[in-house]
Length: 137
Image 1: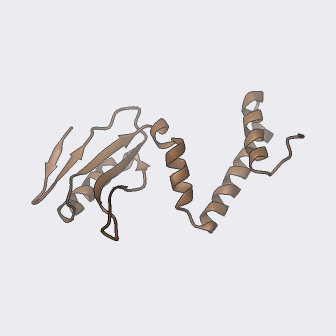
Image 2: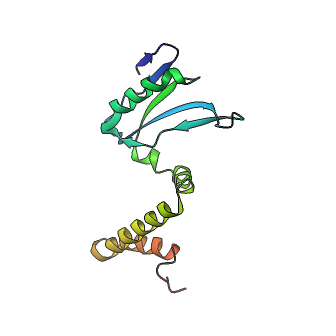
């Protein structure tokens, strides 16, 4: 775990492992209104951009009051329910609409093309929860 020292701060870099798929920069600080301390982070990026994340963290470290952390993540880390809910809550109405269209299109494609019955059933369940199809109840 390399630690990069800047003029007034440091960047802690977790080394990526073979199973890592994403990288994110995390730091602590005051909110924009200055009222509370919080955890802040960049959007997760593909692990191929690990060095870009390190370079960015180093470039902004001296502007921050606390160290920055470059954190590689696996798919399971990024797909947590809380993270997804937070991401959707921060979207605009247009972005949520685009996400909904993408989910509907993907699930419909799975139902049309997938040979696995259990996978098709799960896709149907998602569409039913979204109100796109009726589950017959």
